[in-house]
Image (tube, rainbow, N blue to C red):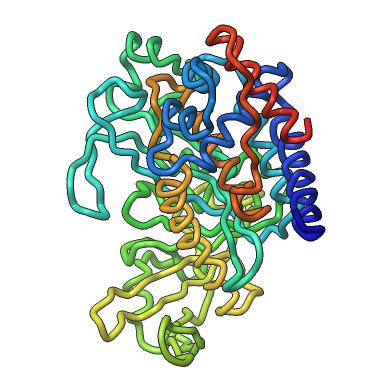
Length: 418
């Protein structure tokens, strides 16, 4: 091995050591941390579907390791919320925060026993699918074209019988406090606190409240109550208030059609092919308010701006945003808004590369454990480079299936510098 390769390998071991120590420190039992290392290795290295059996085979793990990986996810009682907070802290130590955003996740399922599974319309395809529906919280880091989104928290949306069927809930080990709630309520739960929000309390929120959100006004009002800034994409039928002292109720679509209401701005953007070209964006000339009682913070009604990107030549519909960022330029606000698209791209990568769709289990804790490990694998690769940096530990000769599996995990801990 060349001196450069020695230096690279040493740097990789240092990154691994730091990552494992920081993110999995909340797992107080040594065997839990060992299985976390093994599961993380499997998510990073296993091609195709990432089930415990396939991950054990890809890592040349001994007999019994697949069962151990399954047990670590589905039965081991570790606190995923603490690990997610530690993960957010690790990301914060390595990247500059830019914004908070959320993205939807549909996980197709067969049968009806996986926790939270139900039939719903997939608006992207127009088909009804049998699926779980999750909502992820993402921390956008960097700025402009260098923005990257890291998943730091997840909620599983419970629908139909999962909200009231006691037998189903007991079998899936769903906590009593977890009930069926609309998407907007989950977004506001994220905003209220949890994995890493205290690290960046002033980071603005960039949300898409069209289509799949049932109460855009309520979400924006909830953010306002917490004193949080935001830029939210809304439907053209989103209601706002204009004028004082007797406000007029109007939709943002109607508002931007009124004579002399719009202030045009030409923004440059880089298309995929060719040079930069201008994009027209309209800003409503005056402030608007939300038609929501809770939108007032400390008894004072806040003002907002409305932005419109007119329909394009190719027939794309006009797009609208409501923002509280009154002192920022139009280009900066729309750059923030694009964090939402970056989060959706991250969801796609989580499914194709990190096994977010491959959870094998039926329990609520198991789902959250798997999503936590997937988020950790995604963060490790994007913070420290190629997954090949995580070496496979040596496999000892098996004595019994269980003992061999634990020895494998112990060897992995030593190989990772633990």
